[in-house]
Amino acid sequence: MVHVISHRNALTRSPHRWLLKLCTGGTVIDRVTIERSLLDNEINPFSREPMTTDDLVPDDELKVRIQKWVAARKAGVPFEE
Picture: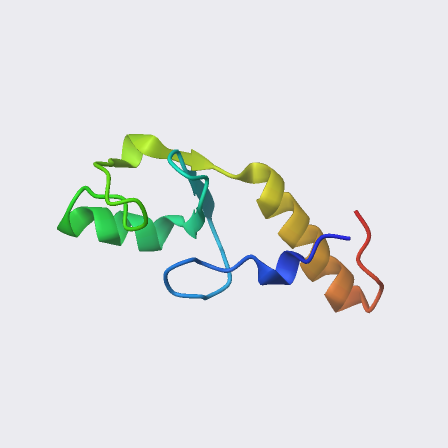
């Protein structure tokens, strides 16, 4: 069983909305949060390496898993992958 609820933004700890994976390290983060960070400086906040928005990769698989988990919670049924 995957604990989808534990997938929160690594910087703000809020639930993800538009999920992206950073190319270096594979950290999952919300697009709005990382784009704001990159406006100030183009540095990966985790590795401190140079980074631009071109280095962001959508994490569609995790997004679908979270959507299924939310739907199961709303329906009052156990989450199954």
